[in-house]
Amino acid sequence: MSRPVVGIVMGSDSDLPVMRETAAVLQRLDVPFEITVASAHRSPERAAEYARTAAARGLRVIVAAAGGAAHLAGVMAAHTTLPVVGVPLAGPTLGGLDALLSTAQMPPGVPVGTMAIGGWGAQNAGWFAAQVLALSDPALASRLQEHKAAMARAVEDKARRVTEAL
Ligand code: RP5
Image (tube, rainbow, N blue to C red; front, side):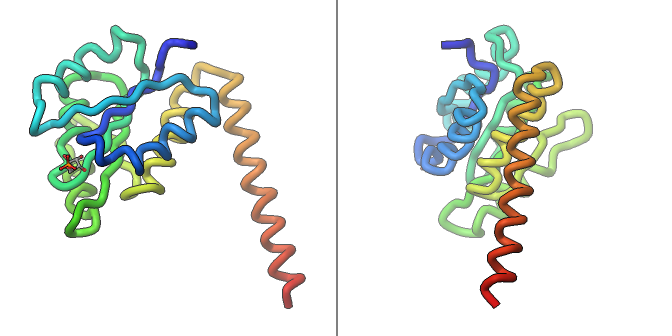
């Protein structure tokens, strides 16, 4: 098993059903990752320590997901210069808009690359992390290229089926 290069960190284990989607994309692309729980509010020391030690442990991208007042990705970005990808998750109210704004509205100098709310964002966090890693991994770049070609073929098939349905 290769050393993880992507770290997925979630505010709670209740975020796992959505964040499995990031894991699935990384598994599909054969990108080694780790996944854990750390909370910006409930375990601030653990969260800071995770980010501070991430680069030395071999991680190259951090994906941070949280719901509500979602400060986890921002805390990651505060403690590392690795690229941080934020995934805002929907809580019981506000549909994730709270988490989207908390994750995206970072002050200058401390960026979080913020994805869409929920499952789309979780999937794209995987694709985005892979695209960052592909800058120095030609084999991964080629797998990403194959994926783009497959998506384009799928659209062609849909267009043909729509035409044939009428
Ligand atoms: C956030 O609060 C977590 O990321 C989660 O989305 C939400 C609820 O957490 P639990 O109460 O389910 O642990 O910090």
